[in-house]
Image 1 (cartoon, rainbow, N blue to C red):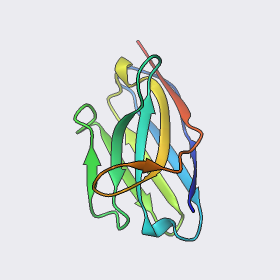
Image 2 (tube, one colour):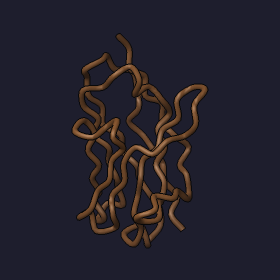
Image 3 (cartoon, one colour):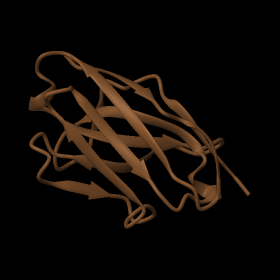
Image 4 (tube, rainbow, N blue to C red):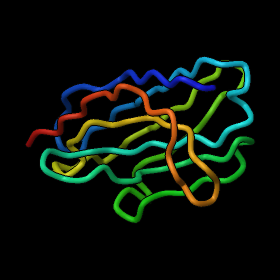
Length: 119
């Protein structure tokens, strides 16, 4: 079982950048695809990005393509989300999760980290 723990959230102005990290416990981390999801106030949780177990394949929501970049370091049991050109609508709690590939079905949620984009 993999237990994700997110970090790196904070307050940033529009157009700025932020990097989220997800540290995942468990010796089998490298066997799992990992993903990022987010939930804005009053909205359902939505898919943001995912990366295959090898790191070769990635998948992004249309709303973040070209701005967000997901990566992983299996030696460190770490997944990162580099967020650039942030917009007000990116404000949400961001969650890391194990995902089924290619369905992107999430499992084993982390506790989330708040990202707030201000004008």
